[in-house]
Length: 125
Image 1 (cartoon, rainbow, N blue to C red):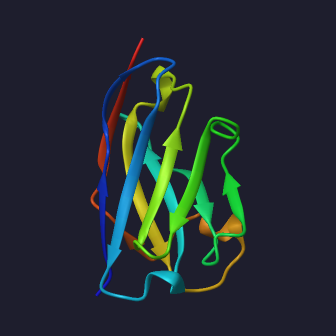
Image 2 (cartoon, rainbow, N blue to C red):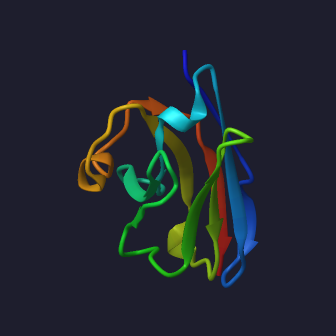
């Protein structure tokens, strides 16, 4: 059974930075593509970023491209989301996700197989 545990959320002022972490347990970490999604208050969940199982390829939503960076440390079974230049519209619950099947990034952006419980990021203006 795959388990994903996010951490690192909190309150930050606009223009600030946060780094989210997600630990995957229960299965070999390197076998999974990984992603981050978010759900703003009152809105549907949306794709943020994804990284291939090898870490060689990444993919971002237009809204975060150039400000957020996804990375993974296979030795620590952890995926990260470095968020810089945060804006109030980045306020959301952020979810870590994992997928064991090799797919295109456009398909990963539609959803993945396994999900964490989420961590709240609040950006004040």
